[in-house]
Amino acid sequence: MQSVVEQEPAQAVAKAPSDPPAIRLENLSKTYPGNSQPAVDGLSLDIADGEVFTLLGPSGCGKSTTLRLVAGLEEPDQGTITFAGKTIVSVADGISLPPDKRNLGMVFQSYAIWPHMTVEENVGFPLRARKFPSHGIKDRVAEVLDLVGMAGMEKRPGPLLSGGQQQRVALARALVTEPGILLLDEPFSNLDAKLREQMRLEVKLLQKRLNIAVLFVTHDQVEALSLSDRIALMSAGVVQQQGNPHMLYEEPANEFVRDFVGKTLLFRGRVETANPAGPMAIRVDGAPDCVVFGRSYDPDGVAAGTGVFIAVRPEDVEIVPAAGGAAPAGMIGGTVSAALFIGERIEYQVEVDEQRVIIIYGDRHDPLAEGARIWLRLRPDGHTAWPSDRSAAEETKDR
Ligand SMILES: Nc1ncnc2c1ncn2[C@@H]1O[C@H](COP(=O)(O)OP(=O)(O)OP(=O)(O)O)[C@@H](O)[C@H]1O
Ligand SMILES: [Mg+2]
Image (tube, rainbow, N blue to C red; front, side, top):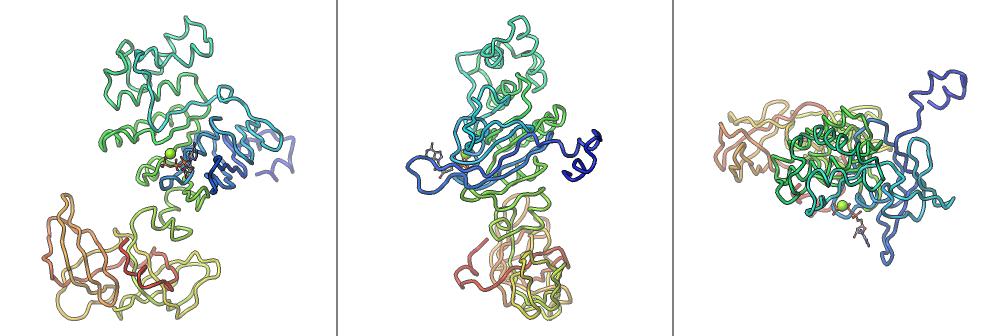
């Protein structure tokens, strides 16, 4: 993009795609006093205008710290933050804009609406704090309450609201100053599963309407996959992979990403035809006629004849009752060793021939008995391949 601008500086039209990102983090690091490990370690990210960008990762990986650095609630030890090309923080240059000058809205992990205030007072607070003309506050508050589906609830005291309503008020309060950036730190974590789903959808629709950049934090991969344009998966303060949800699910860069995003079944196999540029043919151990295609993202490639684990997503395996004899082409045999009915489906523990034990989901309408022989039909392609030189303990570990 930059080269287009450099070649034709007079062409203003070339500017749009090369506009500076809404948020740019460059080489951002933070170690809390007394800690030996950094909470955030050399983090660099670009978030575009109108994009929902999610920081995903296990507890303690540095998600909230990153958000707090962006909000100005913590100071980094190193790095820069720019909003739409404007420097907000530069450790090298001694720049750090105070939080109230950053034009952003934030909803915290433990949402805090003030219990001694009504809905209207809660939402109007940031405007009053900024000395917004008092005659305009009422209208602005009404507008933003309408936006989050809380019109008419202005006079309701904070404690007389449900969890979902409180969350909407917190969202309205974050949006009332019309920020260019919205920071959301696990905003739905206090809600029950149904309400969380509903709020997820509402926030997505709202974000589309407002077209603002949203930096969203969650440790819930379903929430991340369904809400985000792009995701950065973090571990120990470092981004392991960033990309759109499909990329993280289908092209995991390493085992951490593969196992954090979605469930994985590992089958042993051997590479039959190597292909550094695309999918390789891999023969599944214990099933002479079962060859599937999978990619390796190992930059060194995988040679023909190498033993690998084929990582298969559970939805890419179909259970077929065995009709006797050896498994037909494309299938591998197994025996059901346990069946757990969990409502919408049945979870089977399956001892796969010459493989490890796997857990697989089956249809509740056609239950299989414990001890039943089955065949597993693997989707012929779209899998990933991983080195299999692991300890026996790791191999038997359930994923
Ligand atoms: N105020 C603090 N003082 C010292 N250490 C802190 C502080 N806040 C966070 N940490 C440490 O920094 C690391 C990152 O914490 P952070 O809160 O960013 O994690 P997180 O990814 O948001 O986790 P969670 O999903 O549990 O909210 C953790 O090891 C945590 O213990
Ligand atoms: Mg957190």
